[in-house]
Length: 145
Length: 145
DNA sequence: GCCGATTACTTGCACACGCCTTCTATCTCA
DNA sequence: TGAGATAGAAGGCGTGTGCAAGTAATCGGC
Image (cartoon, rainbow over all chains, first blue to last red; front, side, top):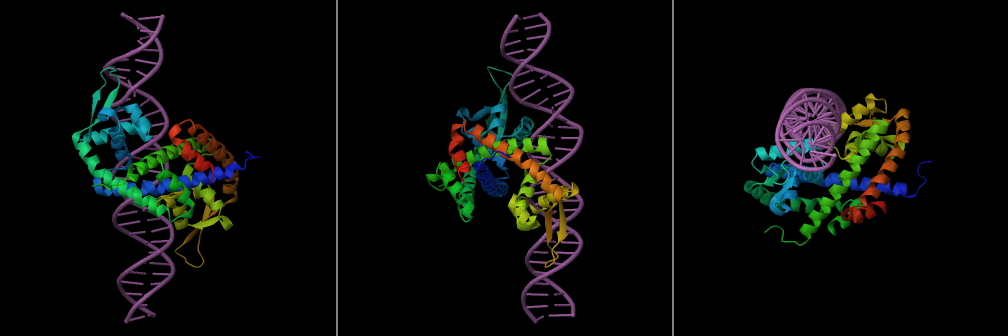
């Protein structure tokens, strides 16, 4: 007898809805950011997350938690962006095992350009999602936070 | 002037929250289903989606919409599951370009075994998410639908 | 009834990711 | 000072994905 809980089906349904909405939005964002700025969603997320930090820098572990990626993926992601001159690495002063990742001016420029794309696409994706009755309540919550 | 809309930041924040919650849950599910039943989340989703259809069958395009994957990814996903004997393909009678995918008895068995894992893991993931203040409102909505 | 356009699905290719191991530098604690 | 832990890089391996090109079947106009 599996869980014998009436809430089970509700949760499963909620999760399917969440996953569906997430996939829709991510898909739209991926295309828009890729087409307009040669950025993946992960790459945009890194720049965006760093921009929200005082000093626009963050350590690798924080970063991998922020983008929810493995350490190795984060290393490679940062390396890619570093290679494009969008961010740079430098050693922590206080703990020199740590490495800070910092957005460069050129990275800030790109972010400035990409944000409007991101925002309008997000808005569109959410608006479209309102056409799907199932997604409506979730969209409302996302918009009202 | 980028959208000049106060709702922009709210939307962006809502999206970040949605993405964070989604990533957490998917990660937990992925590990649990992989460890317990050798199924990825996508694979489980396919079986689950088919199980909700009359006759447990669906055409490829419906399926790729249901799991929100590209057609090519769906083809390969179905091929993998077919190779494991969990589902089978057969041509549409009326439109012979179309291909139906149907869950086999063995696929049904596996789904029966995997569902409890899925459900309890989902419950755990949502409960854990309640520890993160930001995620709370979203978790409430997911659980209450 | 035939030919181009469209649709349904598959396949070749490139790439990002996760897991793993190996390596170096640094910090901590006794 | 020395042993062990920690932060991160580097890279090999397997796998899943999207894109773009390809094949097969259907539809529409003439």
